[in-house]
Each structure stands twice: as structure tokens, then as C-alpha cells.
Image 1 (cartoon, helix red, strand yellow):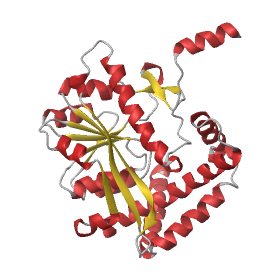
Image 2: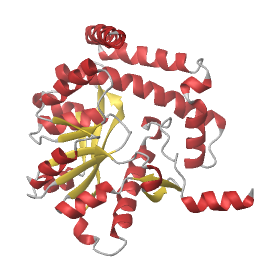
Image 3: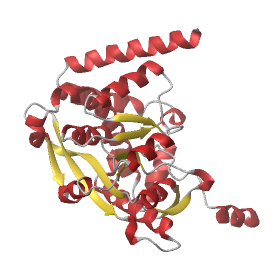
Image 4: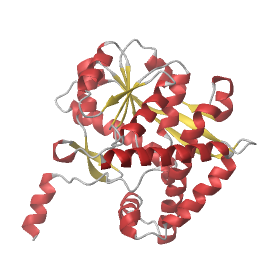
Length: 313
């Protein structure tokens, strides 16, 4: 009963926040995002995960000075808070009639050709930019997807997010327990949207990501091979320029299209995984302040390293 009351209280607070955000113009929301980001720097570093973000940035961009690292971390929090307000505003602000005012496409030919190929597609992104905006835009353009993700612990918030995605034709597929829904969609030449930069633990395949081995789920390459699905590596990043009303412009990009037919060797799974991971890295490098650096992407280490470390000790 206590947990149920907590869920209800969290949902009521969330809905109140939604109402407040919708009541203010984008310029005010952006100013609030900057204020909140400034507040984060005064939190204990364990809570803000400052050290995790700092270590990740320094390892990914050797030679960065402390001032640059702090700027990237601050702008990362600005981006995250602003992204939340944009997600709330999207149903009212983003329409087919004003789509080209709000976004610009990069290599749209690659994405459209893949989506119209008659083959299943894995639309792959990362914890970069505003991934929800990218998904919503493809829904607006008539390309419904199965959005794969972890269910939110709060069932009321989870239902809100599911309704939010269904408004543009998408359906939510749980990351855990949704395998049958994923395969059914691929068998029907559908589109799955998923993130490809999550740590896969010791069972993943280790590929290079910003110069370090990162454990990555094999399932992406395995699904592509089994169902002859194209992997479209995409992103949605905020641009510096804004519209007169304060709403930011975004670049929706197709960074890479990976065809499993090109990887029929014994090491094809690793090669495919490395290729889409390298594509994600290129996208992040364009706007590193829009990447979720507090995410423990390099949490797992190859076993060989552990053995070497043990011998050295």
C-alpha cells in the first residue's frame, strides 16, 4: 500500500511539472534548465556522479583541461533538463506543417531508402541528443516503430510514456520479456528502435568506443543477421540556432547504414558491432555536451585485463 501511494504521489508531482512546463514558453524553460544545471554543481559529487562523467570525458578526449571538462559536464546537465521540457512540449509544438522549420536532415536518403527497402530495420541510437524527438518525428512521417526500452518502475509514469509514444503510431516493447514482440515485428518487416550504447556485462562483445573496449550487446548484430535487417544508426542533436519563438532547431541524422549481408565471416558479429559503435562515436563527437557521460558505458572490462591486473598485483 505504501508503494502504491508513493507511485501516485510521484505521478501527481510529475503531472504538476508537466502543467508548469506547458504553461511557459521555450525560452523560459531553457533558462530554468540552465538554473537547474547550475544547482547540480553544488550537489555532492557522489549524487551528481561528477567523477564518473569527468573520468569518462578525460578518457574519451585525452588532453582536455579541467575547464573544458567542467564546461562539458555543465552543458550536459543543461541539455538533459532542456530535453525533458522539450519532450513535454513536443505534442503541441511538433507537427507535419512546421516540421522543416524545426529540424534539418542529414543523409535522409540513407534512412528513407532503408525504411522503404521492404526489409526489417533496426533504428539504432544512443544516449545522445534528444532520442525521443527522433522517434516522434519518424512517427509523424508515417514510419511507426516498436520502441524497445526498460519499463519505468512507476506504472503510472510508464503508462504516460506509452500513451505519449502511441500518439504517433509507435508501440512500446519491454526490454526484458519482450523478445517475442521484437521477433514478431521483424518477421513482419517492421522497425525496431533501440539504444546501442548500453553496457552488456561480461557476456557482451567488446569493441572500441572512444579508444576503450566497451561491452556491447551481441543481440543487435544477431537480430540483423537472423532477420536480414538493416541497421540504421541515427541521432537527433540540438543545433545552436533557435527559431524566433525560442524553440531550438534540431539535426536529424543518419550516420551509417549497416547491411548484415556484408558480414558473413566468422567474425561478422564483432565487425558489425564495431561499425555501428564507431558510427555512434562519430555522432557524439559532433556535440559531446549532449551525451550522457554519467552513464557507465565502460563499466565492464575484458576478462584478459582482469587476469593481467591480478598477475600484476
